[in-house]
Length: 115
Length: 114
Image (cartoon, rainbow over all chains, first blue to last red; front, side, top):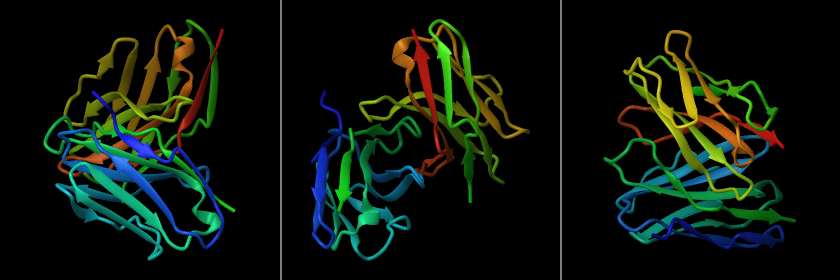
């Protein structure tokens, strides 16, 4: 069974450019999470969805960040315009809400570098 | 707000030794879950072990066990007979019962030396 799939694995862009990160959750999972990992701040939850509906976006840093989940098998995290301080590893994770509490399945992450 | 603290940024032990990673947390709630996640160099986070706060018995998963001290708000991970494949970042995490938000500690980088 395929795990959570994220793309791209690595992205290098220049300040001001738009960045789109993609995630395909595990089939059958109904919750999807976007986390950001940095040395300074550790792992931070940005936003999560249940049944494709955003439930908590309080972790989204600012209006430059947006996330969508148009269907159960796809989500995007967009940063526009990007800034150097957005450089981080962005993780997508999925789970079955109502199942084994706290068992999130993570993707391999997208490492973003903004120059 | 809940917080999770891991006071050991790095640890290093020899293969086959036992190692204990520390974690403390802060919450005013009574019902919650605690977790240890492993992040190997491949970056993909993997759940190692889970503890329900209402259970007094410490969770175990093969070579991995926890020491859960609810009154002290302490949740340490013990790895017995450590193996080279245990080399990774280990994150302690907290989640309120009924919620979905995992709050992670800063992590402990564990290196197992041959």
